[in-house]
Length: 471
Image 1 (tube, one colour):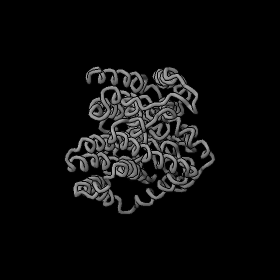
Image 2 (tube, rainbow, N blue to C red; image 1 turned 135 degrees about the vertical axis):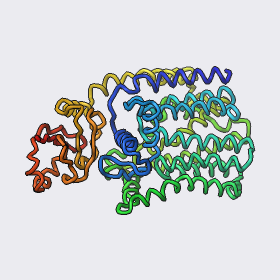
Image 3 (cartoon, rainbow, N blue to C red; image 1 turned 30 degrees about the vertical axis):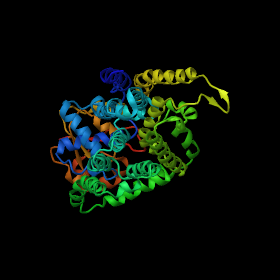
């Protein structure tokens, strides 16, 4: 298969899976945390500190918010499709890197299968069709690992090998934080150990790479801290670290499902694992590299999923070494098609994989216009507000907290922290019910004599009250 043919096939498969009905369902899960700060960045020209409503959003670094803002700005359109497109594009970029440059190490067939594996595993399809951190974060990790493997195996200059991949690690720090760095060093360390080359990490180029990685992060971090003199991001980040270790909201009742869900993210290609025999790889360098990738992935996979309360998505960066292992096994025919001496037809396994790929190509886009469309929760709330609020009137939202339905409100929105900031010309404002008594004790409330227009349904245990002011 030529590079161009592989390139075109991968693009067609990607388009079918990731672009079909991409914007057909409302934002869900954590997508609102990625989109609302991007909207405020564009509206307020403050790209340093992400904001949700009137409060800084301190939980995550801002790279994904910058990317969404750039997508909105470049396209001139703010909707689900343009918000989610960057995730899909990052997934495609990694697949094309594997399918083209990966030929150097994996050959035409191995590189194409590795790229196909990357495009069609369930974990990345799920995240790649959303504007979530994982798709971009895992893609940056994949770029770093793939480039390092290619440069190191080809004995390129250490300054190329140990600096360029670290640029992507630095961008990963801006996307989510440092966990991918630990994954990276476990994998790279295992590869070097298998090849008795751990001393490569002592090369000055490696230390320059680390400086570059940290420099990318610090370039944003220092002015960010200066912009938040009264609020410490460290407190928010420590809470995020506690959540990552103990599980979201401290719950661990689904811990026993971690391993099934972790393996499910690797479907359908995980079906090949019982039959892969790395010892059949003839080239010693390739064999040791893949052994290193395997051990460097197995250890964090097991350790992370054993922690009570953690989520299976934490292991998604391991998709990159998994795809490389699959591609190498295919290129070298490193399989034994039997389990405990019982023959298993190779055609049967590949038919299951093909069926899984086809099913994913159909099910995920179809799900967006069927199940997800029928279970929308935030668009109906916005529709209730839009029916009562003229689109030419400004809505003042007083400390509304995280209310993703506000993305769909047609009227322009200004976020305030207190009732006293409400301008005299205001006609409509929004509050949380839990703040109502406190606001009613404010002398200005009696002066405004607001009229309640709507009490929105609860979303994530939060509600809104819409008031009108008669002048």
